[in-house]
Image 1 (cartoon, rainbow, N blue to C red):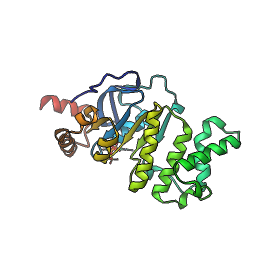
Image 2 (tube, protein in one colour; image 1 turned 90 degrees about the vertical axis):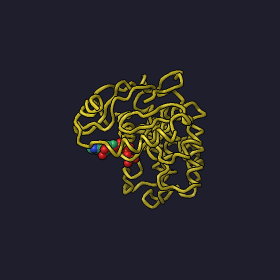
Image 3 (cartoon, protein in one colour; image 1 turned 135 degrees about the vertical axis):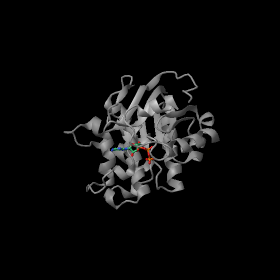
Image 4 (spheres, helix red, strand yellow; image 1 turned 45 degrees about the vertical axis):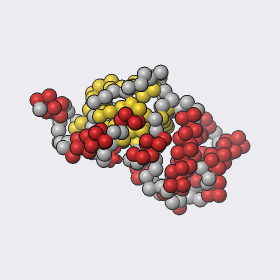
Length: 259
Ligand SMILES: Nc1ncnc2c1ncn2[C@@H]1O[C@H](COP(=O)(O)OP(=O)(O)OP(=O)(O)O)[C@@H](O)[C@H]1O
C-alpha cells in the first residue's frame, strides 16, 4: 500500500485511521492521508470498493465506526455534494430554473426571494451548461444527461470550496462529459478542491492528476500515473473478489495479520 507521494501544501480534508461501515460491518478500513486543498482527485475502485461510502462520510451522512475525518474548518456549506443520480428523486414538481436556483439557497435563505441579480446568475449558470432553452421545463421531463447538467449548474451557484461528485458521468454522452469536464477544470483552476468517483480509467488518466485507488482499503494514493498501474488495478479487482461481506469490525485485519 502506498500513501500520498506528493507533499500536500495545505490539507482540505484529512483521514486518520478511518474505518466506515454499516450496522457495524466495515465497508472501508483504516484510511489515513490528506486531501490537499485545490487538488483534482479521482476516487477509483471496483463495485463495492467503498467509494460512495467515503464521500458520504465526508459530508457527514455516515459517522465513522472508528478513526476520524478532519475537515480543517470547512463548514457544511463549504462542501457541495452530488450523489449518484439514481439516489436523487426527480418526481418533485420543480422547474429547471428553480432547481438551479436552489444553489443560491445559502445566500438568499428561506425567507428571501430571488432578486434580479440572483435570476441573472441562475440564467448564467444555465447558459454555462447549455440549458438556457429548458429553464421552464419540469426536471422530471429531462433526459439523464440534461438532468446532470442541471445539477452541475446548481453546483456552479453553490460556490463551495470542496466539491464531491459521485459518478457524475454515469449514463451521459461524450458531448455532455466534455462540457462537464470543462466545468470541473474551471473549478480546479479557481483553486477549489474537487473529488470525483469515476469508473472510466482513461478519463481519469487524462483529466485527474491525483487518484485514490480503493478496495475496501487504500491500495494506492498519489499521482495518477503512479497509482493506475496494471499491478494496482489487478490487485484492486482481486481484493474485491476475495472480500468477506460478513466480516465484523477488524476481523478483516486479524485475518490479514495471521495470513
Ligand atoms: N446503506 C447501506 N447499508 C448497508 N451496506 C451498504 C450500504 N451502502 C453500501 N453498503 C455496502 O458497503 C460497501 C461499499 O459500498 P459503496 O456504495 O461505498 O461502494 P462503491 O465503491 O461506491 O460501489 P459502486 O461502484 O458499485 O457504486 C458494499 O459492500 C455495499 O454493499
